[in-house]
Amino acid sequence: MGGPQSAAYSQFKTYCCSAYNILRKHYSMIMAVLLLMVDASIPQVSVGSNPSASSPSNGALATDPRAELIKVQDKFRLDLNNAEATQYIQNVIADSVGAIFTN
Image 1 (cartoon, rainbow, N blue to C red):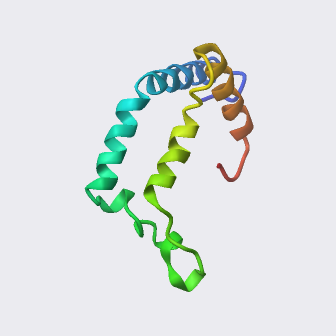
Image 2 (tube, rainbow, N blue to C red; image 1 turned 90 degrees about the vertical axis):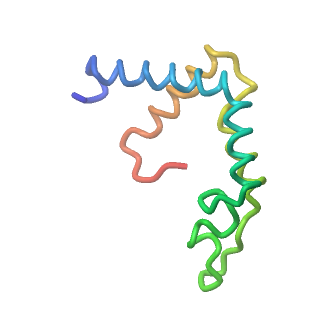
């Protein structure tokens, strides 16, 4: 992309912020679809779908998919208006630059 000071990177951040606010606008539909997927026992969102999370050999317990959906909902930051959400996602991007791992 040409680095953090490039025009392409700036455009990338703009697209990310726009996409984030569009997703936030439609969060209720997104959450409803995810909940339907859990209720339908779709493996990718059901208990035990993450082998490392539910493997008895590593001592981890499988988590309730509905509890995981709350974490997804929290990522939408519905407590923020669009301008604040834009600043939030810009901070997430800035914190992620050069990071080896993400949250």
